Length: 251
Ligand SMILES: [Cu+2]
Image (cartoon, rainbow, N blue to C red):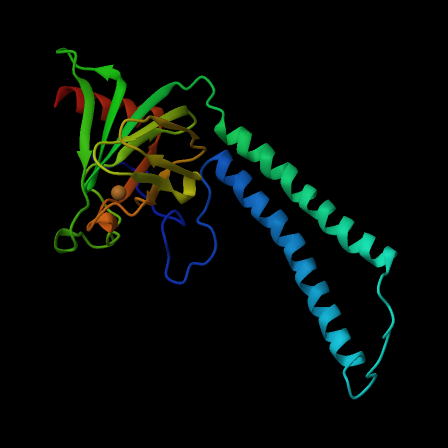
């Protein structure tokens, strides 16, 4: 099924892309904000330390002042300053970080559950909220599309035959596990990275605030075709989701 919302913006890796992909969830917005916050402190620290080092080298070089402060052992004030300031900066970074960590951990009243299972080497999905007349769940496997079968404009090593379809503006719970070895379910635009352990269920919550196609990859070295089990997530309107669901139940 082809969706109208099949447009790709900055939701996939780009050549030389060193910045984040566009965020599609409040979680990822939070992560970007934390990153920007930390980079602010980081830039200040970097320039201050570089400035101090250059000043020291310029003013106290052996040829210029060979025995400056030869008998100084302690400087209580300066020691207080260089101990307390980094501590304060660490606290300033830690608080927003913990806040985000615990907010992301919380899964609140999801309207939809998607069960994803890692296999060597593909992902399989199940929508346990929906069954057909025989009582079977909506479930399917999601394999990479090999380079030879790739259509024009599709991503190499990222496109799959059956994407995960999620309605936008819906609280969704991802339950992740694995069938054989450890995999990891990761999608940068969604701000999720969940380890997939055999015999263990891990969860993540996703609230997509727009339509789009988002790509991720298995993020735990899981065998020879680790790079060939990509993740493609399609965010669609509720109406398109229901149409897709009907297709799945009838087929
Ligand atoms: Cu894997």
